Amino acid sequence: MARILVADDDVDVRTLVVLKLKSSGHEVLSVENGAEAVQSCLANRPDLVVLDLMMPGMSGLQACEAIRSDPTVAGTPVILLTARAQEADVDAGLKSGADEYLTKPFSPRELATCVDSLLAGGRG
Image (cartoon, rainbow, N blue to C red; front, side, top):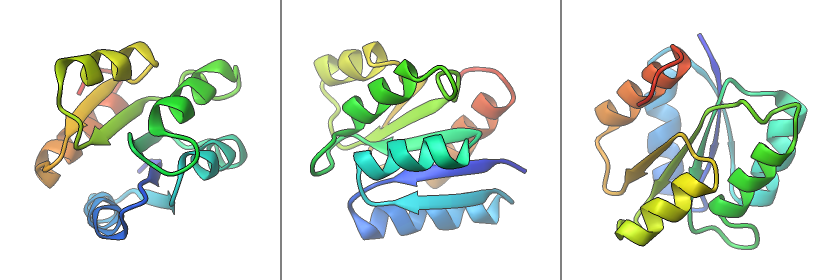
């Protein structure tokens, strides 16, 4: 299947996302923060990236913008997965270049459907 990068500073959420994606047959790389996400994205060229919005150091928004600004990975689909659900937060996430914005708590099935749709070239 696909290689997916997951970045979330909450180990429980990260573990849940990784397990769900692995059970769907994907190869999953996981990191704890935005800076590591950008580094891993550049080094490993994943097929899709899942970013938490609020992480220490570099936020998910900043990581998404950094990914979008590098031509070697700019086309990689990005899902922001976050507890921030205000309309302004969603707008900021999508303006940063994210393809989808999912809020926590989230349904693992909804995440898997979104991932599959983006990998197939659609919207989640």
